[in-house]
Image 1 (cartoon, rainbow, N blue to C red):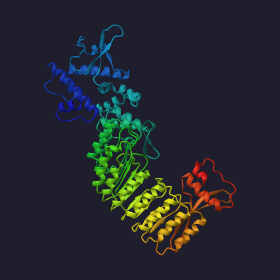
Image 2 (cartoon, rainbow, N blue to C red; image 1 turned 30 degrees about the vertical axis):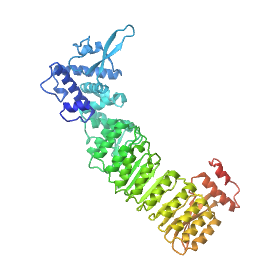
Image 3 (cartoon, rainbow, N blue to C red; image 1 turned 90 degrees about the horizontal axis):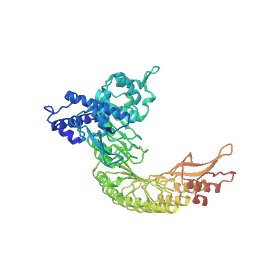
Length: 598
């Protein structure tokens, strides 16, 4: 269809559904008339320029199309069409003159005979002709019909193309839109009525404006979709023409800096993603946050286009709606089904995009992940790497890559539940790496066994400046191992061992170890205790301390651990030293057999 119109119009394509259907109808009529040597001297570009006898029949067809739309009817009988086109050849079932209808053969219920009936070449053509019919009605009828059916999804395309035909400055349309808004006299603020608060209705109204190619005239209630450089139309079904209209609006407003594109949960399919990808390649280069998660097609083709196109001052590509953390010159990739198809594109971006200095990988679990880690190994610009929701196997691969990397300064592996096996892998990496200055392995279920492995690496490593081992399962014995290693490491400047399994008594031993340090190190440590209020109610709290060789600064915090077993482990140690608590309620605490053992 597009190719035929392109050729017919000598190299120009229609920009809206209205233009496309009008062009195709004109082209079809011209071809059909030419076959019978009835065509005008040259192609016509408007329906209004069609010879009157033919135009009269087109209007009769539009009346038939509208009645069919009202009755949800796609197929019309021979007699219905004959009233419009008296020159039907009944034998062949063909319409001479325009070719806008095609024959449909229905086998009779009895006997072998057939009876001819007709439908329009395409359902959208029927909707366009219905819109053409409505545009010829008296204004009172148009207004009444619009009030009744404008928000009915069955008539959406008809009304879109109606606006495309009559324009947004039509009195009927202007009056209808103005009724959808009211003036709040006290504050002088124009607000939307309930009829326009629905996101689907706003999108439909926006589509009507785009059909008329009227960007400047869109009312405030529609442009709420595009506020403050953000394109947010989430959780609403977007067909390809919706996506195209959204992007056309963005391109028309090229003076604005678009930094957010959030179309998650919009059921965008392959064609819609292709439309997005093309627009981004040609136009958008300022995006900072993009969320195309929970759609019907993989967004990674679009994401790769964004990575190549955007300046990457800060870019989050989400496959898991909800994360919007921005760091300068950072790229955040959230794993998403279908990402494996674009591994080579992602690795190319990591290898050849010099603006990426900080990389976050979340849920990157699929075949081919090794290629990404190999790209990190060869990368010479990434200084900070964060891995979220990865397995011990994934950490093994990344640690192998880091051993050879000479530019990475910061590694964040927090919150991955790596346990002691992961601690062993990290320890081996630290023994070899000569550039990493900051390591975060908090919240990883590491016990004393893993702590001893980390302590061994601390004694050998001579470049590490900051290490965070907080919120693990380490007791005072394991933390003392780490503190003994810190004594012999003269490059470490900050050590965080808070929210581990330490009581007040155990902390006294750690404090003594800190006082024996011969070089300045800032230690963040804590002990847990049961605190009771004046009514005898108790809660588990932590005393956070900032320590160095000279003094200890204390600060009281509520206990910041969400893992039930971890809480029970710390609580059990505190109970050993508490001799005043009389009542303990662990109802509905999600304690596992491991927690029960403590």
